[in-house]
Length: 420
Length: 107
Image (tube, rainbow over all chains, first blue to last red; front, side, top):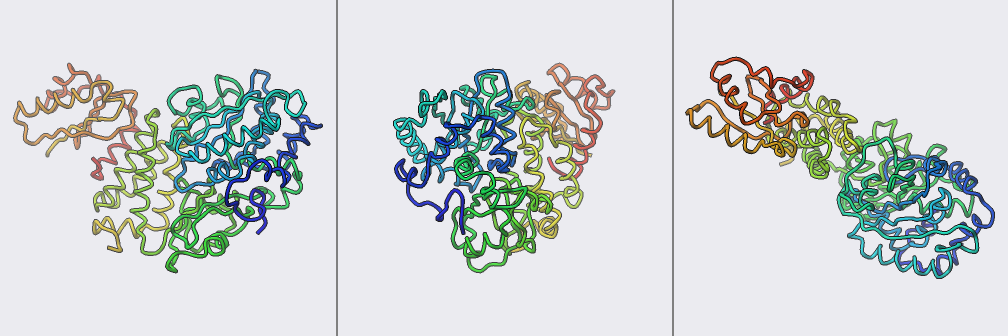
């Protein structure tokens, strides 16, 4: 299957500058600096329909325009390589093996939004990725792709590294800005959004690694070419992560609109041990469970939203028959309770309470009335936090209660999993 | 019926002295030999701005912004004295949410 980031299948091993250039690398940057204004570049990205790959799926061109249009100076770009979503390793792989693709994306973003400084915010546990990016930065600087007056143009850019703490909330865009400002990784209240009031109060574009890796190929080949992949509302491809539940775990680039079945059966070579699928969590722990009969659903923003779930950052988890959903959901609730940064009272209350409630269900306490309380706690707290974490436990818990109520009822009646 | 003081021990309430309040409540309950009264910690009532929060359950009295000197009136109420109205300042919808939850046995 032809990809955009991995045209010949997932890249194994690091590509240095020579290899990257032999495949047309930095052609996009040269083309832009020879005669594209930031506005034209943004229009091209807007027309390509590129959407953020960090989870929210916001249109990249629109985000860039918010920053570019601000008269307040200077402007900044932040590459968000925090990647703390459980099971996600796509950004790490891109930074390790295709560092120049990511760096060219950063430089193009900086040109587009009028930034003179870019921060590479990379998970502090990703040593190989950081080393690879650092080496690529040196190579790119020597070749004149960043620094003073890039390729003889009037565009200058400084690029620096910042280590991202390896906890979930530190990957949130405004928390990343706090870290860069040498503060605790706590999300900021929004609005204002970072695009207009960001780093040191200045307009800042924060983009995920995979998002920016898509920019050079779009610029080199055009928006129309990019739209030949994917669906009209989700153009291009997305990297999906499959973990140990399948025979061939790994990361796979597929055009948006490919079916869940093709990802699981063709890329992942099916579920381990030939087990039957019970449910699918298509977009990480904050997405809603899909029942097994939705396996032919296309993987794109609209299709998953219509099915009541979301694509997140492409971590697809498969729950097989014989797995108790109560145990699954308790793990998810514990995860959010542990990762809530604690600065918003409502989030602390919600995540702690939901985890405590599920623990009671697991032990067979509380009865039916307790099951009725979940949606009340979730709706009471909805939107009451600075960041989106407060809204995250809702979709998996409510979908689990709707689709697999019998697992909950078994626990209530027996205080144990149906399988044990 | 056995009454339980649920004393929030989450960050905000703790920072306002709920640990000391809990210890003092335990001391006073023991001192009076109230075998049908229990003092327990609670995860969070969601009224952090108004903490420290203590809920008397199943009676369903909510005391917010409790100070050490309020404990006397709270204990007096437990013994049949008047409600401590000045500490009853929590929104009715939150009270209902929490009381329903407590009714299911989550504490």
